Length: 477
Image 1 (tube, rainbow, N blue to C red):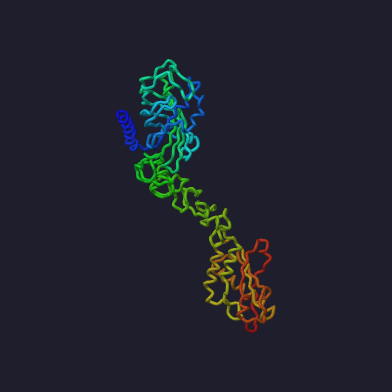
Image 2: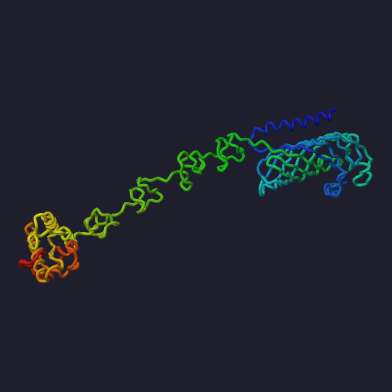
């Protein structure tokens, strides 16, 4: 009864240690199972003969197997390679080597495991290890006397190496062995373990034995302080609820960058900018990262830079036909020339009205003449030829004379409005440049009856004669 109470106390002490385990964030394991003890595999001799009877280790009849729940294991991972455990075995065990009857057996102590799975994956279902341990053993040999037959080695011993084990009930043992956990789920598995247990304090090996055990293993002790469903041992932010994809850390702004790595945790931004939005310093709608001119506003089409105006004429280079020379908007950024002045004057004089069959300009054409004169006076260095044209209706001679007279009338009107005489010459070409047939309607032939202004060079200036020939009488034109 005394021995049974001692065994129960040891088991209760081991179980009590789990209360501490459940308050930490480290993974713990508890295992319950059965064990068997084999003295027949122990050789008669010293340490160098430990494996002489090794074949008997695998003979099931050599084991005294105690009922289930005769072994308890409590273990804690120190890191992915090492585990500290406390193992307790209890039961009534005989020593078949010396034909002893069953005696109370209790072994309890600490062990250190080296986990091979830590070398590749500590969460592997296959979790082998090697183990060394130091234990207290209660196994009473006070009834053992010599001479006695050593059944394992088939010899009769008068004494056992001079060491009288009679009367010894308490022993210090050292154990070494191998084992493996087989995890069926993340928190539940099976364990198989084999050890050789020796009593280094005795010169004899009477109390030495092989031990095998099988246990059901339960992993626990992983806390989740922030209640985010991610255990603390795997949670990079164990005190703040977070997301699994960020190892338990939060992402407040939802930008895919965990707050602990986010320089702007409350404002969404891209990963490549550490969770901060890209700035737009100049407010032009082009982000600084894409803006070739981040401090000066400009359109996206020009990479965030303002369009240049090289000649400073107020017309952007992209729209300026003469980007290096200041000009005017109406000439696409090019400066005013005698050619485009001539074009402007021609447009101004478009549809100028004359009295019927005469060279006299009608009063309603006053505004057109005013505008044409203004264009020419704005370009005092230009020299222009006022050319009169008619349609094909009528004789060639008559049309030529009329065109000369009308061109001369326009020159006179322009000079009357302040245009320098040395800027103007006139000529008539009659119907020579008409494009509409004589048989066409009057409305169709209207485009041929006009005055055209051309810019002329100094070389051509003297060759052109100003026409002042009066128009002859003719039928209606």
